[in-house]
Length: 117
Ligand code: 5GP
Ligand code: ZN
Image (cartoon, rainbow, N blue to C red; front, side, top):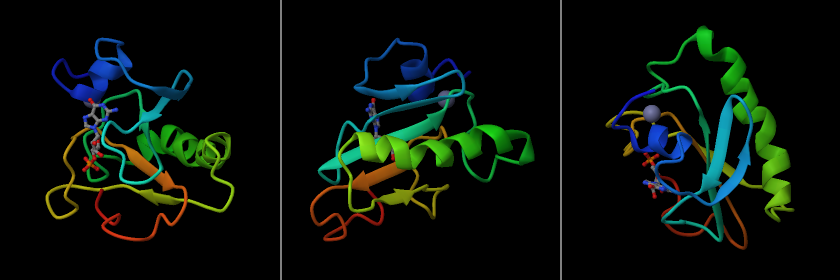
């Protein structure tokens, strides 16, 4: 856990979020600035800054993030597929340095500026 990290603060309940799902290892919540009709983030509860900083130690939690994506997307009404994005570092235009996976979908999610939400 990082004291200042905004997503760690969301995990601790210090900052509110619109929760999609939570278990012991991961949390999913709606993005505050949605770039698609449905746009939520799936994060590990443990503070890992980026994919660069991840390794096989995080295999289980990363697998859980991927493994839950389809179910959560379906529950959010995404019946025709969705897009997942993990931005990494400066080149990946990552803004929040707590690893997270974007899940985007809804009508016409591929149009306009969604590659780097
Ligand atoms: P990145 O560019 O790092 O991949 O994306 C970070 C995402 O986190 C952005 O889409 C941004 O809108 C979202 N975000 C930043 N701060 C907050 C917050 O306090 N609450 C929520 N729900 N989303 C946030
Ligand atoms: Zn964090």
